[in-house]
Image (tube, rainbow, N blue to C red; front, side, top):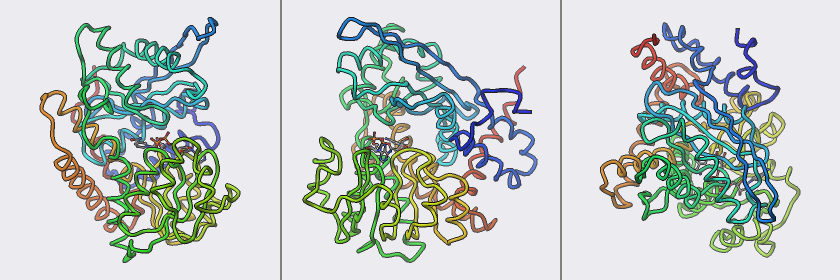
Length: 424
Ligand code: NAD
């Protein structure tokens, strides 16, 4: 039936196809709720917008923008905005669907949404970037709001962009609506702990998974792909716990050092020159070699579709922590399971960001702000409770952590759907 509607038919090897096959795998565990499963295979709403701006040289440029609200059965839509030249509607659909699963897996009172603009922000001046952000926000303003859909940062978007989004929305509605976006600067209703929250969640779930596997983090060798907000923070926390970061890859290349890279030097250099700027601290190797670097833990924290079947065969890791959204293709998932490699799936592993976004939103509504210790304690507790519940479900049904996460999340979403009933 779904083949008749082009916007839900996946193209080959697409993230949306990956998501659909992940949902199919969970159907046997849904019992009578399985009759509602088609709900999860269709976004509730998808908006495509034109974003025209006047460039600094006086020409007019047009960019294509999207906001997809995948599911809002359990609460308002929640999900980041990505600025990237390769963003497509289909990719944003998948990312919005993973947000639905993620918010339900961690039991936050949200649905799932995502947005994006097909633009390379590195090619824009600061003024052009602000114009793109403001026009996009204005165009999607008809469907976002503090009680309907709350954007946040994702790849290539940050606190400044959230501040412009909050201001634009506020100007359009007349007032100051801090709760319309999360990931804002601190003095504009942002939350302490938000910047490091996703990397911290990767660390918390990874530490627990390692403990259950009997793997000592002291001396454990870790390879990290993607050294931005998620990858670099996770790497720092693992290094603090005694692990060695033996390989790092970003868009500039790959650097390895079997004795462990010096993160105090690598992190600041990577922000300006990329990881290959730290030539003095390790060996620069071809990108494909990243995947067979001897390691105990692999953290894909860049973009989706990176861990392919071929790379899953090569890796020596015993534990994969999905910092990125959708980094592992379904065939690779099967290979890793056969090889006894444990995968902590994205929808739980990187849920620390949306959890602290939830704290930010709650603090904005109450206009009462918590200290960082309180935030980190609450974050750790929510992540650990979610992971333990999922682990028990996986043990009970003898299924992977990913299928268990989907089973827990889909049951919550479809139960809400059933209890609300169909309108009209
Ligand atoms: P970021 O923009 O801060 O960093 C992205 C990193 O990936 C950069 O180091 C970049 O160089 C690298 N990269 C890009 N293309 C690459 C390629 N082809 N090969 C290797 N490296 C490449 O983004 P981020 O916020 O760290 O997000 C990374 C991933 O984590 C994304 O999948 C995002 O959706 C996901 N995620 C982010 C958050 C968050 O709070 N930031 C929350 C949940 C999930």
